[in-house]
Length: 198
Image 1 (cartoon, helix red, strand yellow):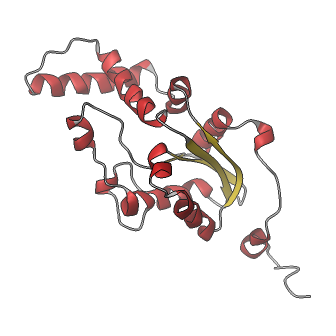
Image 2: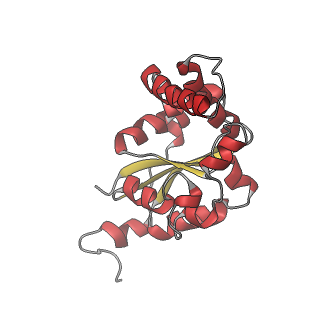
């Protein structure tokens, strides 16, 4: 149970705002072990693969966009599926605008621990004390007003162990994941605390 892995991506706004060290420090303080870390400029194809949405999702989201457009007196000019894809395209424009830092963390219930630290998706509606709550200021409303751009929420975190497994394989090759012992694991997980005393 202490070997669950999760993926964290520090998005371009986290890097541009010099929050990388502060965010990593929070994960280290919680006892998570980084077993992979790299800086990468994502491509649009990587973003679409990462979010892994199917046509059903695109159509459902696109139908919502069309409803909102009609309610605002606008005339849709595209099929629902294309409006749905525009959501991921907006995220891709944001995530590909500069470098991101991918980190694989390992630890007991790593997915849940990271999610509780990151907070909900929209920074302005999330609890203070979370990463997004403490450092994020963007909102879905502002994104909509500014042309349905991607929500700038600093960080991505896998939502389940299964999702983490899939996402890690997209961002990291096997040889980029380092297996090593960390002294912190002794104090957190060793039943007998062997080796602390001389």
